[in-house]
Length: 222
Image (cartoon, rainbow, N blue to C red; front, side, top):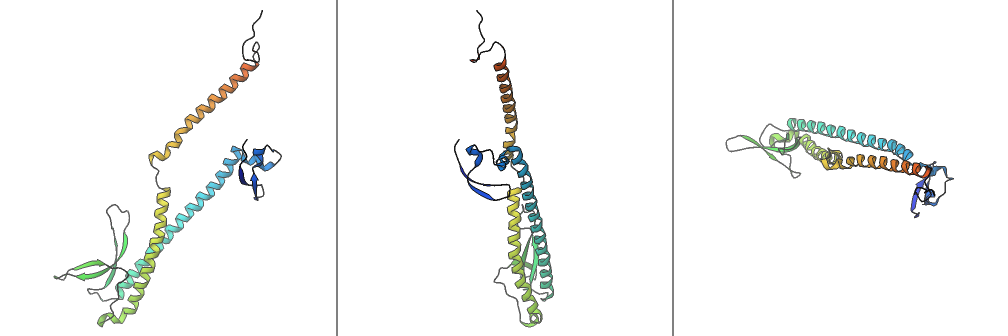
């Protein structure tokens, strides 16, 4: 049997580099038997269950953080409302559905403007946006500056946390039909096992039958 260089763990959890003992024919190491399928799948079942639970816990924590971030963004939106006059040029926040296929809305920072007829409309702004501080804007401009600064902090955090949820959805989302094709091999394997067992049983019976020689041919009597 070909020897492979591997690193394996003993019963105490210590890693032992070198050739795996059972590949060299040594059977006196009790931890060698942990390579048996029944033991292996039992150990892995527990390990994989812990892994899945930790992953699920991480997703739940990420969701909780995302909702907390958006709740704070809503408070910032309220601060914008209180810290600015209700006039054209003020900043405001709206949760908009950016694309028709989106399942959620994006919080967007906007500048309120007016057209020639005095009708208000919203214009998205970026990090170059400034708080007005002249005339009636000056009394609460400092509070409005706080809102603007905190908004971008929360916006960046939201993008990072939402990105983790999107990644989890891509990884753990619904499987495509082709992803389940491996399950179709179960019947083939089970049929092959039954066939192999039948052949082994028949060969043993055949070899032990009276009148059958070592060559497998019936003895001929003279």
